[in-house]
Length: 109
Image (cartoon, rainbow, N blue to C red; front, side, top):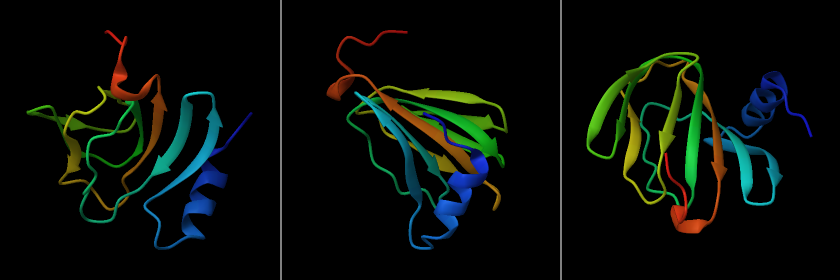
């Protein structure tokens, strides 16, 4: 399996109402490209997830803590935890990798 940044961004651009597009899936793992516009209104997810920042910068709220992010950063969010991107630049885009059992059972850092 393979997905490129270029093809993922093209697919997202072809769906102007979409904030994300799933580009890969295998077993419990899925990969999306996510590009919110102005506001990130996501709610907690049922699986653990990794964000790999492609472009842009801003702040990331995760489980009560806020930290700055920039391209190249990798951010972990445990299942069922409140999180969102804040004050991000207009060019913000990130890969999102969901994995593991629903509820994040058995996942440890």
